[in-house]
Length: 481
Image (cartoon, rainbow, N blue to C red):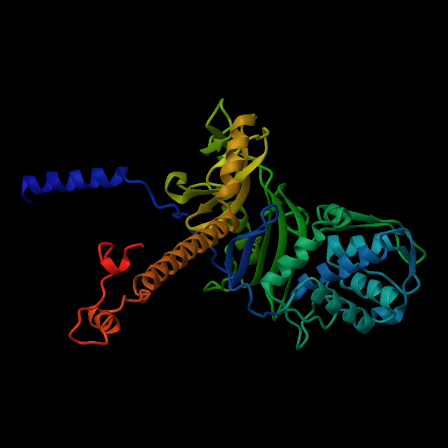
């Protein structure tokens, strides 16, 4: 290959190696055995990973989470209440049991403990009958509670989750009920317990029962023990496969719920598992939990001391602007590989284009919204960094300007101006008409003196031959005598 081409390719590769990775470069967890699963962070009410979480599937032992929740609520004020076991309650119970017997007297706390720690089916039926009078009535309570919690894809048929036609749930609904019981200190205390000791009764000797959650107890399986895990339920059935809902807390204090449903153990050529302690559901649950621990954390996006913008301020002679600060720190839960420079966008808006003094330190002046990769994450108030005093003279001037520029005053001024123009127009028209009337008025006719002809006719002498008498003073006829 041409030496120049090789050098060019090496140069391009070096340049590409320095380019920043995308903000969403987080790889999905390597889930192998389960078709339905989720990772949910409790503190931030956020799904970190999900796969087919709304599909309806067989519920298996996750049903017992709801059974335990109702029992803890029912006996909350009287965990020492005595329950006398009836043989009819245990008739037909199969699967894992605590070995309770007819007539045995137990406390509510003991029965609840064996339900949560040991996933005992007989415990579920004992509680259902003691609380509601029958398992059927109790199942009605379970479905009503599921509806109240917003579990839209769940229908319970029995209090244990053993395979029965018509029963179903979804990963999302299992997360919902798990999140609900995580608020019960009693539930988390028991689900984090590796074993429970039952005192001797009239029908049984003292005995120790161990947790069926392999993350919690070494007793049945030593492969998966994890001190960060504190609950919630583990089980399997023919229809459902391995179904787990576990709670885990990372070293940074973040709490996750991991749900795995429908996991099936792989089959090898000789029909043996890779390891006698290998369990497919636990393999995927462990992968999901560690993936969450390793890939998520908190980022401080902006602090309360970070200047966001400067806002103009009027009516003050000392300053013409004030610095706007976030009212609270913005800390977001994000994948650890998030490139903040490219992913984070900050948008702020101010209450007014120009603020008016006086302002007090900490007074709201606007809002700040942070978006991550185009998704709005959080909005906080922007507040003034310091006090701003008002000048009285500037206030008077501003009030005057505001008064005369008020829309009403402007409208009033326009109306007055229109009236003045109309008045001037009217007066001009009036004066023009008046001048026209004066100009074209007919003049008065003066009486003319008699014409000479008439006068001569009047003074004509009777004797045409005689000249008329003269009125001249020199006329002899007019002389005085």
